[in-house]
Length: 298
Image (cartoon, rainbow, N blue to C red; front, side):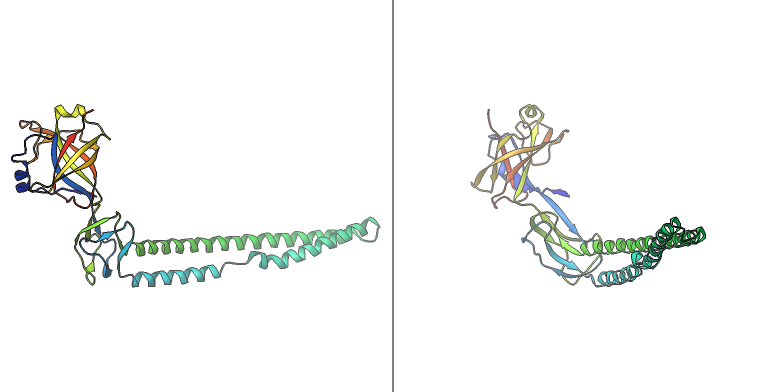
């Protein structure tokens, strides 16, 4: 995100002449600017934005060709479906062994009761215990095998899901949208052209919330503070001037040489401090327009 600043040397010189020093600082209006670039490569299928159009943050206004990405996603989804279909039904596959074990346990209880009455032998009980041991061992081995198979299948499925998520991310990047709400200042590409990753598509600026970058001398700093309300006068040329309420949002921590065509309270000041003053735009303020600041006396 960059800040745009347009200077008009002729305009500033004309405005400054004959005005006197009935101001505390001067500067020009700026706005937050974003250059929207392509995040995917391909042909621009649609791009519904023109210079001067208002755009909303995040709202899609164009698209880059996504056919190949959709085909890749379809293939991955089919692969994942095939992998998932091989996941074993552990309960169903172990049901037969569990049923045998249940029957043997019932038989063991019956033999134990018969043994108490002397109607069965200890060998019968030993045979049942041996059979139960074998069946439980088989069930444990089966559950271990099925569990390992399920884990491997789940791992493969997760890997495919990750690839699908990556494709979805690339598909989202085929959308053309502005990250901020604002006005299209410039359009660099058109529908039907080929886009490359990083290629500028358009420039958008927030024209509703502009600010005046004004310059104050060091001896004025003590009277400035963040959040202070000031009066900003926009000069539209001729005798047309309008006052706007402004609020100081930033004060530079280091001084700089006075920019060309910027007047200060002291004509001899060579070093100044940049100050940003937020102003609500009523639609008249334009980038690069000359403005003056008048501090409100407490």
